[in-house]
Length: 141
Image (cartoon, rainbow, N blue to C red; front, top):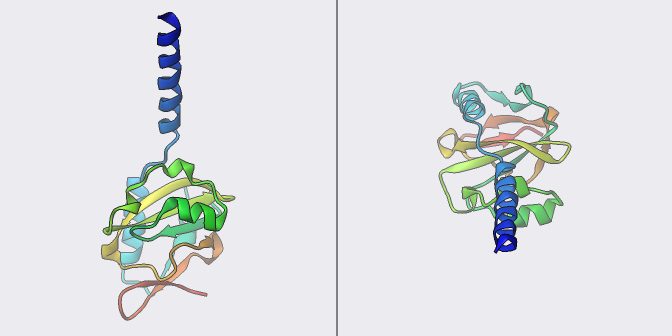
């Protein structure tokens, strides 16, 4: 009986640790990004976002399979868990990476426009976007 309770407690602790390491959308960061893209400026420079260490940006489009992106880009996105991006069409998921490890995420509303380059890793110094005539946010190359 004691062994069964101990095993159950160990299992629950491991599960709690796993879920406590999951990233959740940063509300302040999301608001900052949405304000940047809604400002009417010709260029939105996400590379200027500070307050935490990051080196790359990954944009995930609605209905993106996180497992597929992990495999295609050889990334460990376990900290995203079973994210709603796989089932929602109302957000883009911006994943901020520090040397290819997720450190922050922002669930950005599609109201700011879509992104023309989801699914690729963008260096911080190249995370500049311009609005297309159709209202999408296009990476400046």
